[in-house]
Image 1: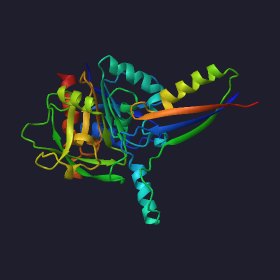
Image 2: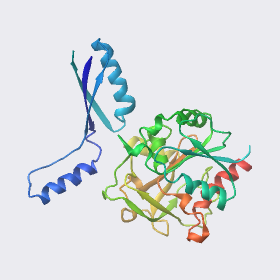
Image 3: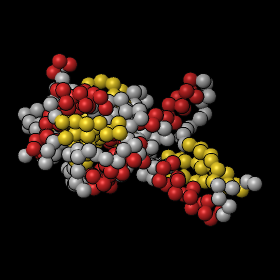
Image 4: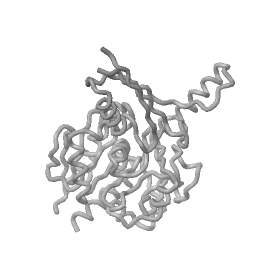
Length: 83
Length: 233
């Protein structure tokens, strides 16, 4: 079995209003040197197969068809084998 | 073909009854609800995806609704030329399903925006807009969304213009389009688009909330009447 960690990031060419809002909050807190805040998603789950290639294939399909919208987001993932 | 609207009900839809009421009680059209777990479109000649927060807007707006069993039927219906209209969350679902191009991101104001807006009508020669008289400089329809900021890359925007796929743009009462009247940051003030074939339309404003004369707005009727006329004639 593998433990998958998926990171989804919005493409840099696309505005991230959420990141802009959060950064405004930082300014209100007096944290002033923060620039270019962008918010993505971290998604964790288990993949119940023993073969790494099969796990990679399934996670790639999950990411490209559902977890990320390929028009505006990129994804990367890490697979850690667990016993 | 007989006229029958099918209104899809997803978990989290909240404009399904408004749509049903306006189509049935105000406009006297035949309407039926379509449950998201079913696959039967019940001989609908028009499928309407209503507004709301399907599946809690989890992951991305419309992302999970797009995989509901009913959506497989809606996608093949649309690909065969069937008429589909997505309103607000319904528009977001059509984008996620790939039936319409582009994506929706959060309003640039970061606020949920709920108010009447004016729309300039850029193409009146479609299934969805033919009943909108040229004398009308704009139509008045309410919006209610937090994520209606339409984004497309330059190439897609050029394509939308070239193919006359942009139907509605946020404007003032005289139909002038500018940044001041853009409620959400949408590129080119886009409020509604149609696919290349002209049978699938998505719009953020709510025409079903602008049908009943008692409530003071009736411009939404023009969109449903356009569809009805197309089917009946």
